[in-house]
Amino acid sequence: MWAYLFYQDVQLFHHPEQRFSAEIVALEEKIELTNQGKRLFYKTNPQLEPAEVFYQSAPKQRERMLVWGYYLSGLDEIHILANQKPELSGIEEVTAAHELLHAVWARLSDEEKERLGKELRMVYEQVKTASLEERMALYEEEEPGQFENELHSILGTEYGELSPPLEEHYALYFRNRPALVAFRQQYGATFEAMEQQIQQLQLDIQQLKADIDTAQASYETKKEELDAAIAQFNQRAASGGFTSQTEFQAERSYLFSQQEIVEAEGNTINQWIEDYNAKVSALNTLSQKNQEFYQSIREPEKILSSDS
Image (cartoon, rainbow, N blue to C red; front, side, top):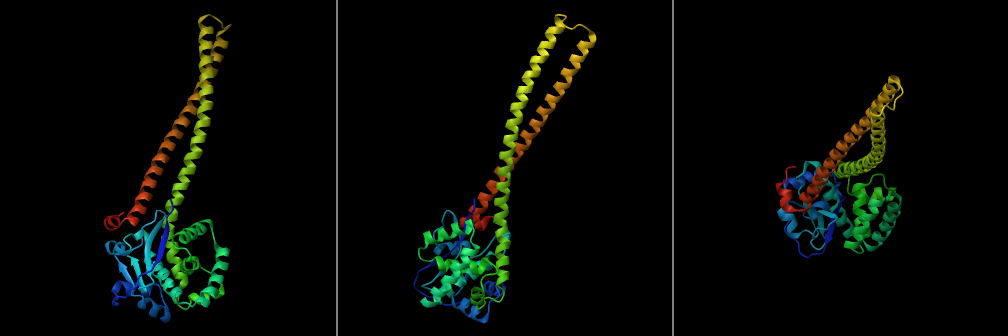
Protein backbone atom coordinates (compact mmCIF):
# COMPACT_ATOMS: atom_id res chain seq x y z
CA MET A 1 0.00 0.00 0.00
CA TRP A 2 1.04 3.53 -0.54
CA ALA A 3 0.71 6.10 2.26
CA TYR A 4 1.02 9.79 1.54
CA LEU A 5 3.32 12.01 3.57
CA PHE A 6 0.99 14.45 5.26
CA TYR A 7 1.87 17.90 6.53
CA GLN A 8 -0.71 19.93 8.33
CA ASP A 9 -1.58 23.51 9.20
CA VAL A 10 -3.21 23.62 12.66
CA GLN A 11 -4.97 26.61 14.23
CA LEU A 12 -3.74 27.46 17.77
CA PHE A 13 -3.08 30.78 19.56
CA HIS A 14 0.04 31.20 21.67
CA HIS A 15 3.70 31.94 21.03
CA PRO A 16 6.49 30.39 23.13
CA GLU A 17 10.00 31.67 23.66
CA GLN A 18 12.25 31.02 20.65
CA ARG A 19 15.15 28.65 21.18
CA PHE A 20 17.12 27.03 18.36
CA SER A 21 18.94 23.72 18.76
CA ALA A 22 22.12 22.74 16.93
CA GLU A 23 20.02 20.23 14.99
CA ILE A 24 17.69 22.97 13.77
CA VAL A 25 20.62 25.15 12.72
CA ALA A 26 22.13 22.21 10.81
CA LEU A 27 18.76 21.53 9.20
CA GLU A 28 18.43 25.15 8.13
CA GLU A 29 21.87 25.02 6.53
CA LYS A 30 21.00 21.87 4.59
CA ILE A 31 17.90 23.38 3.01
CA GLU A 32 19.98 26.37 1.85
CA LEU A 33 17.67 29.26 2.60
CA THR A 34 18.05 32.83 1.40
CA ASN A 35 18.37 35.55 4.03
CA GLN A 36 14.64 36.16 3.74
CA GLY A 37 13.99 32.44 4.09
CA LYS A 38 16.25 32.21 7.15
CA ARG A 39 14.53 35.09 8.91
CA LEU A 40 11.14 33.54 8.38
CA PHE A 41 12.29 30.04 9.29
CA TYR A 42 13.67 31.11 12.65
CA LYS A 43 10.70 33.35 13.30
CA THR A 44 8.51 30.24 13.26
CA ASN A 45 10.45 28.80 16.22
CA PRO A 46 11.13 25.51 14.39
CA GLN A 47 11.29 22.39 16.54
CA LEU A 48 12.87 19.07 15.56
CA GLU A 49 11.23 16.65 17.97
CA PRO A 50 11.48 12.98 18.91
CA ALA A 51 8.32 10.97 18.48
CA GLU A 52 7.15 11.12 22.11
CA VAL A 53 7.18 14.93 21.96
CA PHE A 54 6.02 15.37 18.37
CA TYR A 55 2.94 13.18 18.74
CA GLN A 56 1.69 14.96 21.84
CA SER A 57 0.39 17.81 19.71
CA ALA A 58 0.59 16.37 16.18
CA PRO A 59 -2.63 16.01 14.20
CA LYS A 60 -4.36 12.66 14.51
CA GLN A 61 -2.88 10.00 12.21
CA ARG A 62 -4.84 9.18 9.09
CA GLU A 63 -4.98 5.70 7.59
CA ARG A 64 -3.37 6.76 4.31
CA MET A 65 -1.32 9.69 5.55
CA LEU A 66 1.90 9.90 7.51
CA VAL A 67 2.38 13.07 9.55
CA TRP A 68 6.01 14.22 9.41
CA GLY A 69 5.51 17.86 10.23
CA TYR A 70 2.94 20.55 10.88
CA TYR A 71 2.68 24.33 10.95
CA LEU A 72 0.70 25.90 13.77
CA SER A 73 -0.58 29.06 12.12
CA GLY A 74 -1.91 30.62 15.32
CA LEU A 75 1.45 30.11 17.03
CA ASP A 76 3.35 30.73 13.80
CA GLU A 77 5.33 27.63 14.69
CA ILE A 78 6.86 24.68 12.82
CA HIS A 79 7.20 21.17 14.27
CA ILE A 80 9.20 18.44 12.53
CA LEU A 81 9.41 14.76 13.44
CA ALA A 82 13.03 13.66 13.95
CA ASN A 83 13.84 10.89 11.51
CA GLN A 84 15.13 7.64 13.00
CA LYS A 85 15.37 5.69 9.75
CA PRO A 86 18.43 5.93 7.47
CA GLU A 87 16.24 4.86 4.54
CA LEU A 88 14.38 8.15 4.84
CA SER A 89 17.40 10.44 4.81
CA GLY A 90 16.32 13.83 3.51
CA ILE A 91 12.78 13.74 4.84
CA GLU A 92 13.52 16.23 7.63
CA GLU A 93 14.84 18.75 5.12
CA VAL A 94 11.84 18.45 2.80
CA THR A 95 9.43 18.58 5.74
CA ALA A 96 11.07 21.72 7.12
CA ALA A 97 10.88 23.41 3.72
CA HIS A 98 7.29 22.26 3.22
CA GLU A 99 6.19 23.72 6.54
CA LEU A 100 8.17 26.91 5.91
CA LEU A 101 6.15 27.42 2.75
CA HIS A 102 2.97 27.19 4.85
CA ALA A 103 4.36 30.07 6.89
CA VAL A 104 5.06 31.93 3.65
CA TRP A 105 1.50 31.34 2.45
CA ALA A 106 0.08 32.56 5.76
CA ARG A 107 1.85 35.89 5.23
CA LEU A 108 0.62 36.49 1.68
CA SER A 109 -2.12 39.01 1.08
CA ASP A 110 -5.42 37.86 -0.40
CA GLU A 111 -4.40 39.44 -3.69
CA GLU A 112 -1.06 37.61 -3.68
CA LYS A 113 -2.75 34.31 -2.84
CA GLU A 114 -5.20 34.76 -5.69
CA ARG A 115 -2.46 35.58 -8.19
CA LEU A 116 -0.17 32.79 -7.00
CA GLY A 117 -3.07 30.36 -6.70
CA LYS A 118 -3.88 30.71 -10.39
CA GLU A 119 -0.27 29.98 -11.28
CA LEU A 120 -0.18 26.99 -8.93
CA ARG A 121 -3.32 25.51 -10.45
CA MET A 122 -2.04 26.04 -13.97
CA VAL A 123 1.20 24.21 -13.19
CA TYR A 124 -0.72 21.54 -11.30
CA GLU A 125 -2.66 20.72 -14.47
CA GLN A 126 0.65 20.29 -16.27
CA VAL A 127 2.42 18.05 -13.76
CA LYS A 128 -0.41 16.17 -12.06
CA THR A 129 -0.42 12.40 -11.95
CA ALA A 130 -3.03 10.01 -10.61
CA SER A 131 -1.00 9.76 -7.41
CA LEU A 132 -0.79 13.53 -6.97
CA GLU A 133 -4.50 13.94 -7.72
CA GLU A 134 -5.36 11.36 -5.06
CA ARG A 135 -3.03 13.04 -2.60
CA MET A 136 -4.54 16.47 -3.20
CA ALA A 137 -8.04 15.02 -2.88
CA LEU A 138 -7.08 13.68 0.55
CA TYR A 139 -5.76 17.08 1.57
CA GLU A 140 -8.96 18.72 0.36
CA GLU A 141 -10.96 16.21 2.39
CA GLU A 142 -8.93 16.75 5.56
CA GLU A 143 -8.43 20.52 5.15
CA PRO A 144 -11.24 21.98 3.04
CA GLY A 145 -10.28 25.22 1.34
CA GLN A 146 -6.53 24.65 1.71
CA PHE A 147 -5.89 23.15 -1.74
CA GLU A 148 -3.70 25.99 -2.99
CA ASN A 149 -1.92 26.30 0.36
CA GLU A 150 -0.92 22.62 0.27
CA LEU A 151 -0.13 22.70 -3.43
CA HIS A 152 2.15 25.68 -2.80
CA SER A 153 4.21 23.59 -0.34
CA ILE A 154 4.17 20.41 -2.43
CA LEU A 155 5.22 21.93 -5.74
CA GLY A 156 7.88 24.02 -4.06
CA THR A 157 9.62 21.07 -2.41
CA GLU A 158 8.89 18.07 -4.63
CA TYR A 159 8.74 19.22 -8.25
CA GLY A 160 11.52 20.64 -10.38
CA GLU A 161 11.40 22.98 -13.37
CA LEU A 162 8.22 24.87 -12.58
CA SER A 163 6.92 27.95 -14.37
CA PRO A 164 9.10 31.11 -14.29
CA PRO A 165 6.68 32.95 -11.95
CA LEU A 166 6.75 30.07 -9.46
CA GLU A 167 10.51 29.64 -9.70
CA GLU A 168 10.89 33.37 -9.05
CA HIS A 169 8.58 33.13 -6.05
CA TYR A 170 10.34 30.13 -4.49
CA ALA A 171 13.75 31.72 -5.16
CA LEU A 172 12.85 34.34 -2.56
CA TYR A 173 13.26 31.65 0.10
CA PHE A 174 15.47 28.87 -1.32
CA ARG A 175 18.93 29.26 -2.82
CA ASN A 176 19.00 25.69 -4.14
CA ARG A 177 15.49 24.38 -4.65
CA PRO A 178 16.65 21.51 -6.90
CA ALA A 179 18.48 20.09 -3.88
CA LEU A 180 15.16 19.89 -2.02
CA VAL A 181 13.62 18.02 -4.93
CA ALA A 182 16.61 15.66 -4.88
CA PHE A 183 16.03 15.01 -1.16
CA ARG A 184 12.41 14.16 -1.94
CA GLN A 185 13.39 11.80 -4.73
CA GLN A 186 15.96 10.18 -2.46
CA TYR A 187 13.62 9.09 0.31
CA GLY A 188 10.67 8.70 -2.04
CA ALA A 189 12.64 5.98 -3.80
CA THR A 190 12.46 3.91 -0.60
CA PHE A 191 8.67 3.87 -0.66
CA GLU A 192 8.49 3.41 -4.42
CA ALA A 193 11.04 0.57 -4.47
CA MET A 194 9.04 -1.43 -1.94
CA GLU A 195 5.81 -0.84 -3.83
CA GLN A 196 7.40 -1.77 -7.15
CA GLN A 197 8.87 -4.98 -5.74
CA ILE A 198 5.49 -5.97 -4.34
CA GLN A 199 3.70 -5.16 -7.59
CA GLN A 200 6.27 -7.08 -9.65
CA LEU A 201 5.99 -10.13 -7.40
CA GLN A 202 2.22 -9.99 -7.65
CA LEU A 203 2.42 -9.91 -11.45
CA ASP A 204 4.97 -12.74 -11.50
CA ILE A 205 2.83 -14.88 -9.21
CA GLN A 206 -0.29 -14.23 -11.27
CA GLN A 207 1.47 -15.16 -14.52
CA LEU A 208 3.17 -18.20 -13.00
CA LYS A 209 -0.12 -19.49 -11.61
CA ALA A 210 -1.74 -19.17 -15.04
CA ASP A 211 1.20 -21.04 -16.62
CA ILE A 212 1.01 -23.77 -13.99
CA ASP A 213 -2.74 -24.19 -14.42
CA THR A 214 -2.40 -24.47 -18.20
CA ALA A 215 0.56 -26.85 -18.00
CA GLN A 216 -1.12 -28.92 -15.29
CA ALA A 217 -4.22 -29.42 -17.43
CA SER A 218 -2.09 -30.44 -20.42
CA TYR A 219 -0.01 -32.76 -18.25
CA GLU A 220 -3.06 -34.50 -16.81
CA THR A 221 -4.50 -35.08 -20.29
CA LYS A 222 -1.22 -36.47 -21.64
CA LYS A 223 -0.73 -38.66 -18.58
CA GLU A 224 -4.21 -40.12 -18.91
CA GLU A 225 -3.58 -40.84 -22.59
CA LEU A 226 -0.20 -42.41 -21.78
CA ASP A 227 -1.66 -44.56 -19.00
CA ALA A 228 -4.34 -45.78 -21.38
CA ALA A 229 -1.75 -46.53 -24.08
CA ILE A 230 0.43 -48.46 -21.60
CA ALA A 231 -2.56 -50.47 -20.40
CA GLN A 232 -3.46 -51.29 -24.00
CA PHE A 233 0.16 -52.24 -24.75
CA ASN A 234 0.32 -54.58 -21.75
CA GLN A 235 -2.97 -56.18 -22.74
CA ARG A 236 -1.75 -56.80 -26.29
CA ALA A 237 1.55 -58.18 -25.02
CA ALA A 238 -0.22 -60.55 -22.62
CA SER A 239 -2.62 -61.78 -25.29
CA GLY A 240 0.00 -62.14 -28.04
CA GLY A 241 -1.37 -59.21 -29.97
CA PHE A 242 1.97 -58.25 -31.52
CA THR A 243 2.83 -59.95 -34.82
CA SER A 244 6.58 -59.66 -34.30
CA GLN A 245 9.28 -58.81 -31.78
CA THR A 246 10.16 -55.81 -33.94
CA GLU A 247 6.63 -54.42 -33.62
CA PHE A 248 6.66 -55.09 -29.88
CA GLN A 249 10.00 -53.30 -29.35
CA ALA A 250 8.99 -50.36 -31.54
CA GLU A 251 5.77 -49.84 -29.60
CA ARG A 252 7.56 -50.30 -26.30
CA SER A 253 10.27 -47.76 -27.24
CA TYR A 254 7.64 -45.25 -28.33
CA LEU A 255 5.82 -45.54 -25.00
CA PHE A 256 9.08 -45.10 -23.10
CA SER A 257 9.83 -41.93 -25.08
CA GLN A 258 6.33 -40.60 -24.39
CA GLN A 259 6.74 -41.43 -20.73
CA GLU A 260 9.99 -39.43 -20.61
CA ILE A 261 8.24 -36.47 -22.25
CA VAL A 262 5.37 -36.56 -19.77
CA GLU A 263 7.74 -36.96 -16.82
CA ALA A 264 9.80 -34.01 -18.05
CA GLU A 265 6.66 -31.90 -18.22
CA GLY A 266 5.77 -33.01 -14.71
CA ASN A 267 9.24 -32.05 -13.47
CA THR A 268 8.91 -28.65 -15.13
CA ILE A 269 5.56 -28.11 -13.43
CA ASN A 270 7.04 -29.12 -10.08
CA GLN A 271 9.85 -26.60 -10.60
CA TRP A 272 7.31 -23.91 -11.47
CA ILE A 273 5.37 -24.79 -8.33
CA GLU A 274 8.55 -24.42 -6.27
CA ASP A 275 9.19 -21.05 -7.91
CA TYR A 276 5.58 -20.06 -7.26
CA ASN A 277 5.81 -20.98 -3.58
CA ALA A 278 9.12 -19.13 -3.27
CA LYS A 279 7.63 -15.98 -4.82
CA VAL A 280 4.56 -16.20 -2.60
CA SER A 281 6.83 -16.52 0.43
CA ALA A 282 8.91 -13.56 -0.78
CA LEU A 283 5.75 -11.51 -1.33
CA ASN A 284 4.46 -12.31 2.14
CA THR A 285 7.81 -11.38 3.69
CA LEU A 286 8.07 -8.15 1.71
CA SER A 287 4.45 -7.21 2.40
CA GLN A 288 4.99 -7.77 6.12
CA LYS A 289 8.20 -5.73 6.01
CA ASN A 290 6.37 -2.99 4.11
CA GLN A 291 3.55 -2.97 6.64
CA GLU A 292 5.96 -2.93 9.57
CA PHE A 293 7.87 -0.08 7.91
CA TYR A 294 4.74 2.04 7.64
CA GLN A 295 3.60 1.09 11.13
CA SER A 296 7.00 1.97 12.58
CA ILE A 297 6.57 5.43 11.10
CA ARG A 298 2.95 5.79 12.14
CA GLU A 299 3.33 4.56 15.72
CA PRO A 300 5.67 6.57 18.02
CA GLU A 301 6.81 3.69 20.17
CA LYS A 302 7.87 1.74 17.11
CA ILE A 303 9.68 4.72 15.67
CA LEU A 304 11.79 4.89 18.79
CA SER A 305 12.55 1.18 19.06
CA SER A 306 12.88 0.13 15.41
CA ASP A 307 16.37 -0.45 14.08
CA SER A 308 15.31 -2.05 10.81
